Length: 123
Image 1 (cartoon, helix red, strand yellow):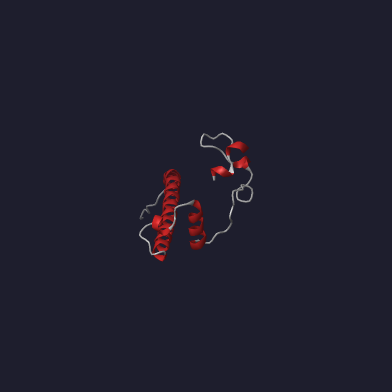
Image 2 (tube, helix red, strand yellow):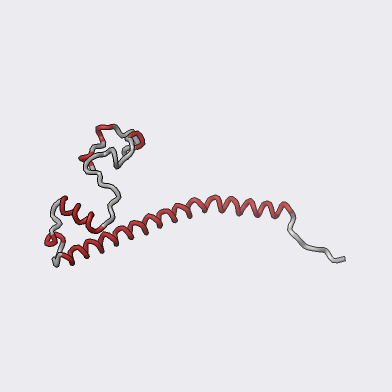
């Protein structure tokens, strides 16, 4: 009679257990790498859009650099931003419409942010 060869249930369970442990150790690092790469990609996109907008603004003004194009003050920067980008909301120096209550914010050392530490002058 021919004997049939196969894996036992214990061997299959041990193999699945090893695969589970290895995947549990590697999946978090894969997710972290994916998030990091996503942030880098988004940062590159923002940088490229800003760079192209600044170059377009300089070319429209027929200038060599930003100073010659007239971007020498905060007002000029605000004018540039409103002319080249879609503005959702202008804060105009007030915290209330642009940021939620201060209770959710923390400093870099993880202490709670007080009302006096976050003012419109810091924006």
